[in-house]
Length: 110
Length: 118
Image (tube, each protein chain N blue to C red):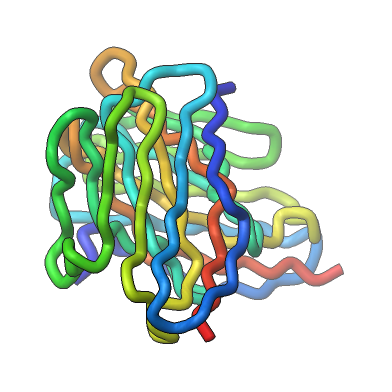
């Protein structure tokens, strides 16, 4: 059983559409990170959220941390083909434990 | 931002040989590094947590005698796949934790090593 449940697992949309990816858990996290990974490369950190209810924006990407710090969402506005990739959420519970969700494979068609 | 160097990027070896993968934090000290395994189109699976100066902590189901981890310095951790077999073929990724205040932990990843065992 995954500590972090990420959904959807696969998502294929047309350029210009909006989408939301969810990351849920029954555990409380001290912080939660979102990463994007392209084939054959390591994940690249997009954002870290720390405070319950926190919202961070990165251009067309909006990240939200749940009030109870158990869940998070990533919203992409007007998706572009360059957004295609594997999006991973990862939660830190203590100083020595960080786990990843199963990932959402996003494909944006031109 | 912080940089983690992983080497080699890819390796092809014969069944039964051992392969060593290096993970270096280039501009920060990392008391903790992590080793992951990733199968095609899947997420990262944590194999073990590498702590500088002490034994690694392995996840359930990961054979510690097969996947030897050494973290002898604050900037270097190595993963050795011993007596590799075709089923060990995978993409291996390391990460290093840069510590800040509470909730300011950041993981920086190496570029991964694609291992192919013939």
